[in-house]
Length: 186
Image (cartoon, rainbow, N blue to C red; front, side):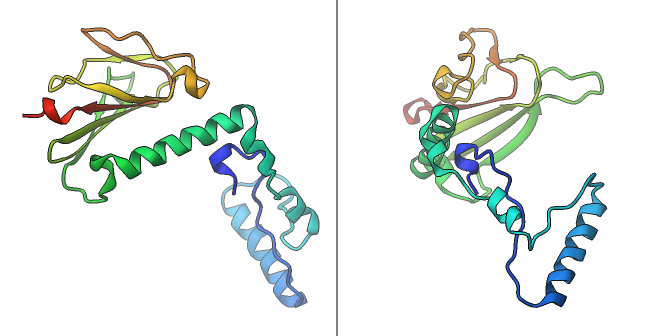
């Protein structure tokens, strides 16, 4: 559906049925479905050719500008998943997730910290969901090296914050993947 390169065309449900009763049943079902989540305006007609035409992908976008960068980012993530031992297994063994960062007004913490490991291979994945930069204490069981920072200039971000000995800075709405080298794990 073009998500891997940021397709701008909406992906709308469309059909090409010949049975008038089935067409009307699909239209009615779509209207009911959209009404259940408060859709304002006319529901795209699934039988209308215009709905299909609006949904056509422009694959040329994948080779231009921010679309090309997003596609490269997805490829990088998939490469990490395929090659890093801590990410290759779907098993929940060696997986831990917790909230991190300074508590907000209602006590919520803006960072999700996911630790994954298998044998001597360990990763920490940090996801900052805040609209602002967040500083957290660096992981105490390192040293760690960065495998990915979604805010890096390579991904059209503002650039990774400078490394500090006393805290780890995470840009707004960013993800960071840190790795403990196998020779560092005891």
